[in-house]
Image (cartoon, rainbow, N blue to C red; front, top):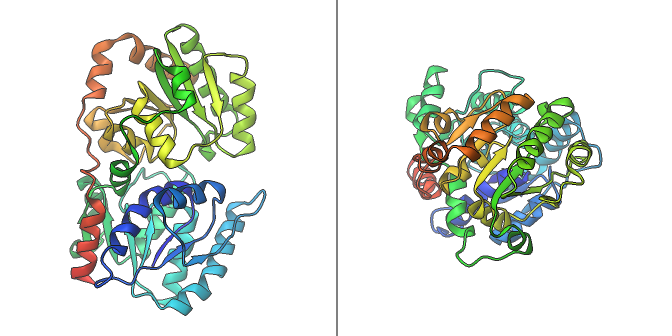
Length: 362
């Protein structure tokens, strides 16, 4: 059984679902979605033609971490007891993953952690994701680490070496099926002829004053570079929307649009000149497409991209973002070094490796 509930999880788990489903002689594959995100989750399921066997539908207006954790934990119990899975696969660092893994622990069902071993070592950054991923790794039996650094993190914590596998990241697998030559979209047509900047911002720890600083820095730089246009597929969180409209409205070279489907977003990413984000997954996806990424966070659990040179951690202070964004646009050698850095997150075949490991080891 594969359990996931948010858009980022779905993007990275659906390629694995499809890979396992293509091997019916070896696997009976069940999909359980929690619906932690609803509309955005459903978009991904449709894009990958994945139909859940169980849908817990836990999302509610104004939900808190308390609500999500309790609802997933209580509602998944029946699905697990009914289906009796031999192993449950969860992904990454979401509250869905943590609560599902905890339910499996209570029922003594083995857990496999896809994207295991990422660390910042600061439980409050990113919050609550750093706690979630560490907690899931305590519970898990099998660890599918995307990089050698992630494997080393797990070994340093005393995890069993024989159950740690470096597979690459399944998010790169998704790009192989979603990015298409000849893709068109009205917003991309609007940006044609300009250097397109793709923006995402939504992290809980950036809500409030930090998010206002991010947006002010981006607007200042773009006002000084008339050959740029930006597209910001805005998050559903009303606090994010309030900050974005307060700082960015009235600037005609920046479009705030509704969230994109995974197919649309990946193709926007492929068409972009550069990316400014506080996301986790985009730090892996953009390097796979040769796009420089400025990470608007104070910490990252993906240091491999920073070391490779394709990511730059720019913090959440306005002046720091302003300086780094300006340099990226003005200094061609800096841009080229980031755009042509090697992608440390895999070759697009992680799902095949995970399927092979499951077939041989479980």
